[in-house]
Image 1 (cartoon, rainbow, N blue to C red):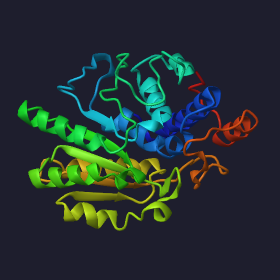
Image 2 (image 1 turned 120 degrees about the horizontal axis):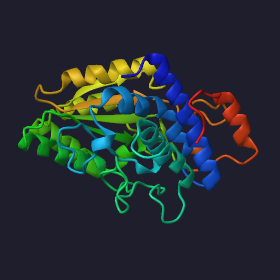
Image 3 (image 1 turned 90 degrees about the vertical axis):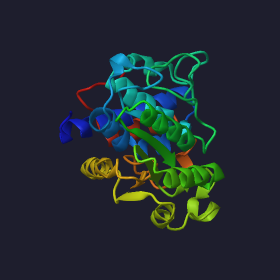
Length: 283
């Protein structure tokens, strides 16, 4: 377990990794990655019960995480590397042809920590439900976590899965929605208004935790602890995590511009200066 200050330091370094990886590759999705740095850091280091040294695809005896919006691999890979799933130096291979760190998660190269190929949106919750039911069948009391983009909730498969999990009482499942109100074509309100997400999940028999500021590490820790306390009581749990896309860099924040676009070589030093340095060091 890390202290609050240690977690904040890791999240800062993760943001540096995200910007350096995507700028070097000249492609990637930095916006949503920056916005979820606190959540992924908290999950990897404090919330989940898992052991990088003993990773297995079936996840028996450990918590499992499925990231449905697989395009945010910069934050996924950075936090996994910093947690010890693979060498931090390997982050330098991001998006290079034939490497383990593909633009979307791939199981083809056996990267520890990745249990599903994701990128086609809408599928992660269904996979998570299957894993959660599998744990029930094997009497494994560990939890299954999923992460979703709010724009992803425009996919119909999500709501089929939400209806199923609520009806069947899949109560070892916690699904988090990154609620930044931005997607590649504009705001979620402009593209397809999501309405009252809390009411929607509750209508499908889910318990809901709302984290008002998902870029505040303490709020993330408290929110996920509250969600864990709700498991095992007959209902799946949803966490609505309000974040800012591009958080940490003022000219990237609260805009969909950097959903799938990267910084120029000239803008990278400006962004890194805003984020600051850490004793953890760059890869």
